[in-house]
Length: 110
Image: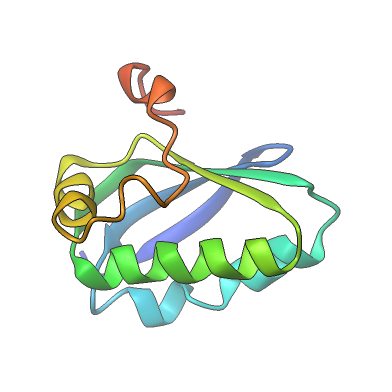
């Protein structure tokens, strides 16, 4: 699967579904701008339904985080898949990016 979707789960909470990789990132890249134009002061993106990911997926999360910061929006990522977690660890991004470690033990949003 080379398709990924960002779905609104509840106010301020969105879930990514599908693959987050080199092939799918260009199709989802601009979707985040729509979230930033909404009146959300805090946004959580649940990654529990991301099936496969690579460094392009992590680069996308970094870019979204930077865009949110520039607009004064608090952005959090929850349920980071092991594959993305390992890439973030190797890249030394775990201490920097807003990964909700408390929520990692809870099941992904349905």
